[in-house]
Length: 247
Image 1 (cartoon, helix red, strand yellow):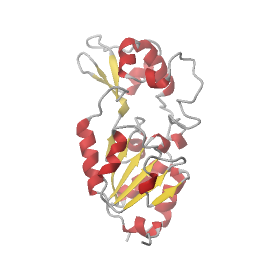
Image 2 (image 1 turned 60 degrees about the vertical axis):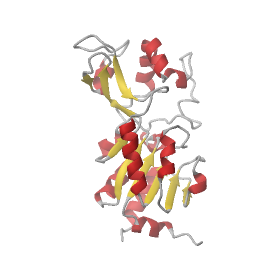
Image 3 (image 1 turned 45 degrees about the vertical axis):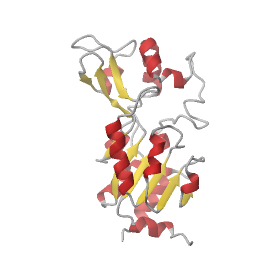
Image 4 (image 1 turned 30 degrees about the horizontal axis):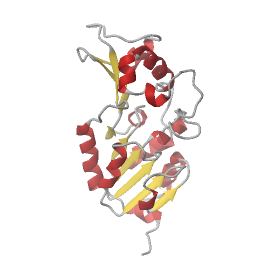
């Protein structure tokens, strides 16, 4: 079977879903987790591995240490959207891109202007009191430069609305993402090794013909890809937007 040229696949797509991970934001100078330059490989002053620090049990037992790491390594308020984010905005404006499903918590898709972003693992920009559910933005976390941020109403501990290890995903969000993937005629997977479950399992619900994977390293779904691209996500998407005309 002769596969269609990539340009033709992109121009004909009417229902694109973008499924992205940390690699989407590395060009905004936000480190990913598992690459050679990622957080899991970096030398750290912390006596615990990142996977342990970013777990529910560690947050509960060592909340101050959690926040010391979290403020330093998970919040990048100076980061700006890159070409990947802006290219996805353009695809949405053209009516081709129907949803962005992201494992990222940085909010850069929304900052760029995307309107339908499904955040599987939450967002640094939302925080809530564990006692009374009062909501706080990320600035509330960063203004408390040390120690544990506590609620101004009741004194309870404020927790980031991000999914930590040992926590369940927001299943309402997961089911919504699943429905978008079921309806897609083109699935673009970018910046993720597809190794984190259950988010990675969403790919199994795709019933369309074409999958494009943009990632510097191998993923767990390379075998189903129509096209594998080992290049910069920003440059690839920017080229598509500028060169491919929808049919």
